[in-house]
Image (cartoon, rainbow, N blue to C red; front, side, top):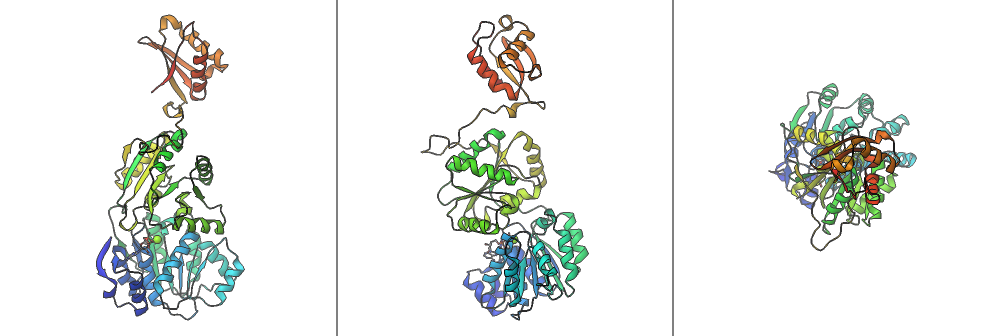
Amino acid sequence: MFTNTRFDSWDLPQHLLDSLEKIGWECATQVQKDTVPIARTGRDVIGQARTGSGKTAAFGLPILERCQPTGQLQALVLTPTRELANQVAEEFQTLQGETGLMIQTVYGGTDLEKQAKTLSGGVDIIVGTPGRVMDMTERGHIHLENPTLFCLDEADRMLDMGFFPDIMWVIERMKNRDQTLLFSATFPQEIIDAAHEFMDEPEFVLTNTEELDIPPIDMYSVKIGRANKLWALGRLMSRMSDEDQTIIFCNTKRMVDLAVQRLNKHRFVVEGLHGDLSQNQREKILHRFKEGEVKTIVATDVAARGIDVDGITLVVNYDLPVDLDSFIHRVGRTGRIGRKGEAWSLVSRDDAPQLSKIMATYGLEIIETEAPELPDGIDRDPVSRQDDFGETADVFGFVTLHLNIDSSLAGSSRSVAHWFQSSLRCDEMAIGDVHFDDGSTFVSIHTSKVGLAIKALEKHDMAGQRVTGTVFE
Ligand code: ADP
Ligand code: MG
């Protein structure tokens, strides 16, 4: 990812060179090498590179170079989330060193009046989320006709989150916009189309044209039913060392809450991160995660945007993402700037087609394996494994129960079905076909009744026999 191009070979302003030296950055990453020189000429640039490849500085350096500490708004950077806005603003702050620019964040969930007050003290660069920027513009706190520089970070995410109409709203009001920079990890056609609409002969810089750049990490999938995902997660987490940090991804806020609750119950210290938390709460959790006080967080895709923590060595997809690109964004949370990492996906039967799609789309090698063994020194599963009949069921929710009783003893199919109906006091619909084969009896039975059926067999004889039932896979 790093190139041989040294920052000091560019005639950047001394302030910027000084701060780069101070933070120990010597060479540009590929996307920086490819985009910074073009952006510095004032041209519009579209840059694509994988998560964690240094896109922030790719647009940050040219923006910081062009802005002057005048207190007049010169550049607007839009990001999809507050966390990302903070992260971008922080990196700008670090990179600018002694340049003296006023860089402000503008996003929802914080006191609008307070934010307005800070802005009225003068601002050179705003890094914000679309909604709040619109709001502040309508209230007259931001004058969009002033800035000449416009930058969209994580454009693909913005598109997913439905921000494009808001972005167009902003762009229409930026009457003096003369340079636009757009960065994204992926490039769906919609973005290319949109970009052509509001950009001026943009230069496309794709650091990987064939496919999305995948972090150099090991990827595994484990076929596992919903009922035992927590068990598998417990195994994965029990392998973590003290230095490791983990992000567990769920698809919904509710699932995040549930997973946190259950993991806490099993004495795992984890925190949940999703859009329903207040800005304050989210920042606190993120801070504790960055400081390593919290080793594991459970998050939705949106909430995890902008998390840039070097210690993340394990990403778990508790659910597979619905949106394919999210998979890449998720696994990109680990293996940052050349570090090792692992990504594990817990794949239930319903998720399986999605996994194939992800692998085919990005040409990924995801190794199918079992949940890992317990590490040495730990002899009990943190979460115990449950019977899970759902995964073996057919589309109607029926599984086959194997009974070790011969047809000559069991009687007719009808009498077997009847035995279950009366012992379980269940509807005849819950018991399907009964057939006999090779000295055994097979009963098709609805998943909701299988556990009960096995128990009933333990308690009561069938046709005067002790019979054992096991789910037949
Ligand atoms: P992206 O936006 O592409 O996901 P970031 O801009 O967040 O990536 O960069 C990822 C990490 O790499 C950050 O911690 C950033 O500070 C660091 N970084 C970026 N460029 C360099 C560089 N040239 N040298 C060293 N570290 C860098
Ligand atoms: Mg970024």
